[in-house]
Image (cartoon, rainbow, N blue to C red; front, side, top):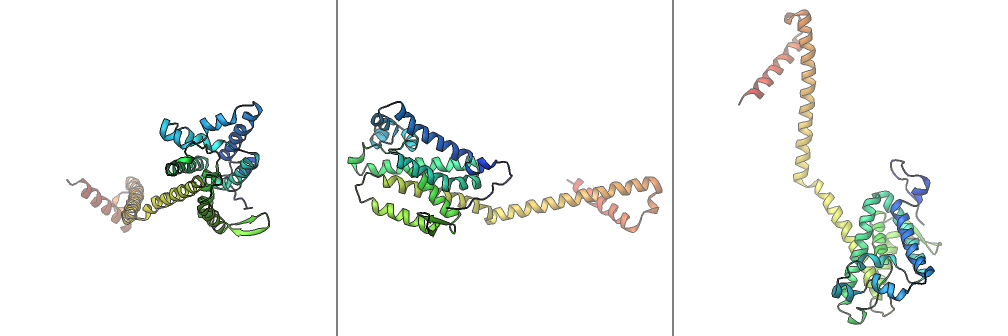
Length: 278
């Protein structure tokens, strides 16, 4: 398992450092929507049909909420335990690094994107169009890709024994999902691949946007901004000196000024006269 980095600012308690807000509420929401329907003896098939991701219902009846709601439903105890463990294991550090709002935006973008990719590929496989897809795995594959991109050299322990760098583990998992698309095993591999792809593109877009800060136009703008700031600072410094010299003139007269003080007054007067021209 990976180590934790301290959250900047020291505003989180130790509990929140382990379970940041978005991770905490995602865990609670997923657990609630797994256990409550079973406690209340609700019809799980009907629940999954209306709130799972059914591609034919998305494009046929515009059940667009399914692109979000499917992420909070799970089929079995092992399914939800593994998804939530991976979400906490990798997502908590991403949230501490990015902040809660940015992590939540990324998580839902990856999850919704995974759903859209799966709906698109379901159109090529009509036999799967009415099969409900449930689970947070699409979003979690996005989280895995993001973690590998941000912390590629970190180690994780596979089966708690074998140390593997995160970048190699995630590449292996994505490759495994790709080759598994040819198998009819009841797993939404296209959703997993969609979440990984959307997560990758999301971060690449963000990095490209940040790279614009170093474009020639942006570098020139920053240079001009710093140059103007320096000139403004110099002008303020000169005016402070001028005020001090004027106070001295009031006390001892102009003739008792030093050569340096007279030069400062001349430069200030010349500068003001230039700015006053039209």
